Image (cartoon, rainbow, N blue to C red; front, top):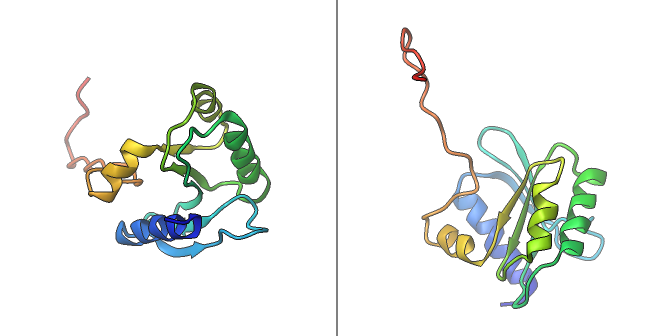
Length: 134
């Protein structure tokens, strides 16, 4: 699978999950983001796709975070890789000021088979008169 095919696959997964306005941007001059989309609740997402057999390192995560800060402020960032992230790359992602979801090889497989989703779990609304436990 080529890089553009991988980006297309991710875009198709997002469409199947209910994202709207899914745009494949991955070309030179894409601003560091390969796919943009809007979640069913209206939250914008910006996705970087890394079709790597090797590990994704901290510099790639920093570059993506820079793209989010400069041109995609307010978007939920998603880094999708067919490989894995290094320990340093995960640390960079965890320290990010903007939300950053990581989809590594195993979670990607779960997403492809429908066992995982990018969308946050929905919490059922409280019934009037019900109180939170705790």
